[in-house]
Image (tube, rainbow, N blue to C red):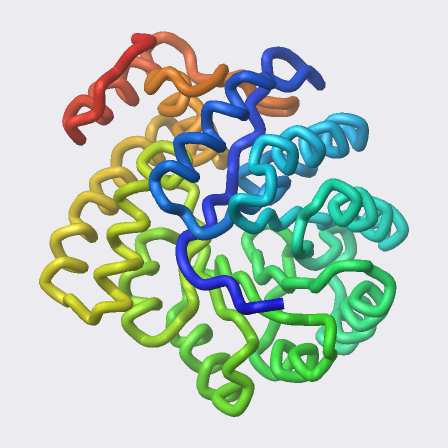
Length: 304
């Protein structure tokens, strides 16, 4: 498979109610992101609330998004689970629906050792029917994929890339250096505040939640960084930081980022802002703060 480079939005999972997908909202988001020029879509990740969704809902969402995308751009499907067997089953569903790859963070109950991670990902890569991207998400799974572990896993022919959400550019640069003789191994950064810097340093793109709301902005950032247009990167970085410090920072919640993205998508008229348990959507006061932040960014608020 040709390496994917560019902006890969980690798509939210629009819901009308608990375990009920917002079908039209999901289609709206897909069309808006594709129209803005994103390079792929990643579903059922952290931003997609995968671990809060029933397996039934996850399978339905894979069908829905792959059907809406209809092969226009690649779709990656998150298969993170504490059960390897369930990850493999979801990978099979992803392939059946036309996805091109799967993404897995580490199992997240008992924290695995680095050797256990190598053994786990090797077994998973052997069993899944699509190329596998490993996902470093230490804040949510209690374990850090060390650089040497990534290098060891990169030797597996079915492990094709890393998504890093550690907020640690020293780590990502170390991985890139250690894999300098493996240019086909993809390296993506999750935190959008680091995307411009990462791509300037030769990383392959960003998996940026803000692209659910403003996909054009993140595509422009990627293009500017690829072109080594540092002044443009600095200009766009200010807008990205404005999003990060307002929309993602409402309230004192561990889920403020997720609540903010879903609330903003609702205010922009794309989809419903219902969240899966154990989280609930913003109330009126918090929603008003997100609306003001969107207006300050020059966006048209449709559902205030």
